[in-house]
Length: 482
Image (cartoon, rainbow, N blue to C red; front, side, top):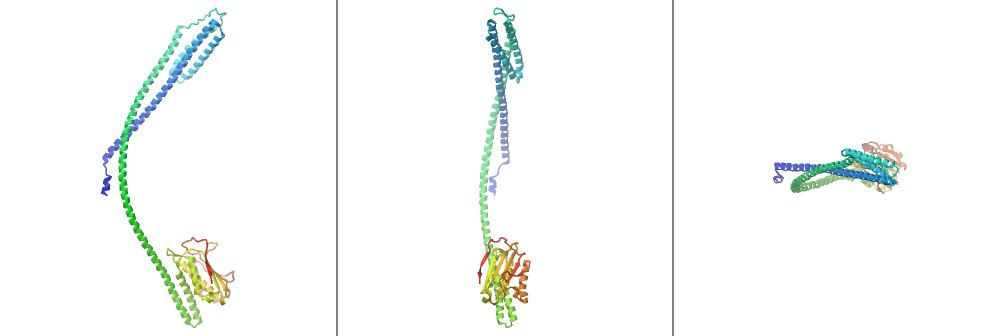
């Protein structure tokens, strides 16, 4: 790790100095760019003003020339009319006068936004109006003469003072306009020089800033490469550790799987041993039953043997799932039914058919064993008492939710029914055992007369504990056996 640390060691003072120079160059570049932008804006505004001023002054010059031309036209028409008395000359005179009025009105609009020319225009208009008034007076004097040979009392020659005044106004306008333009040109030249200087400084500072930025970029690239090398080595070390850890976890998982299988085998073996031990006890009771001559003792031993055999069957048929706590109930109950059929003497079951319908679900091993014992007891009782004298019949066994959603185990036959049973049979040990076992699920069993004529036992299971509430949509129907 010491080598990796030295790769990234650096001098803080040099970094600080470079950073200050870099930021200084960037700030200067930004200031110069800002100044250049300001000068460009000012120069643009000055040029716009110069162009507008030029356009306005050119327009004023053009209108002043038109006014002078109009005055000349009026003077020519006036002289011609005084000699010939033609109506065309008088009309030409009047048209020229109207054009001068229109030009003066238009020029007044132009100088309205330019106060520097308004005073000149007022004086110029005054002189033009005086010249027009003089020529109008002369025209009126000509109109009142009786013939062409007569001369009007008003002379057509304009006083020299008035002509000099008009020329002086035009000269002052031109000189003033030229002075203003020259001043604006000097200002524009100054701003152009400042703009050039700011642009040069901006370019220089930009190059300096670009140099520092590129230099910093190269340093960052080198640092990134170093970090990449370090990251690559760290990744390889991490991958090695992950691989090692994964192998350890795989070994632990395999060991846990072997232990689970071993525990499962032990549990299955324990269940089989319990079932076999109970089967041995049942066989011993059967031997004792065969040796006994007392009918009452034989009856008690037979009942005990059958119940022990039922419990033994339930333990032998129990198959735990992968979680070691639950079992598939439909498969388990079908196995219990099959074993009970095999355990009953052939002469009792040869004419009897058992029909099963079990909803497939997962149930805890404890509850499944209890249900197996209850079902075995009820089936054994039906085989022995519901069909006397080898009578043919059917037994229907079902398990699943009803319309209200409650789980129920139902055993129904079409045998002789409960009416044929004695009081001792109705209050026997088998019924007591079933009732006690059913109380583990919250309610007692219901013994009813079946619609088929036999007996129907309904076992509600309100407290049934199911680890997996998902049930298949189709019931697993076991084939009927005889």
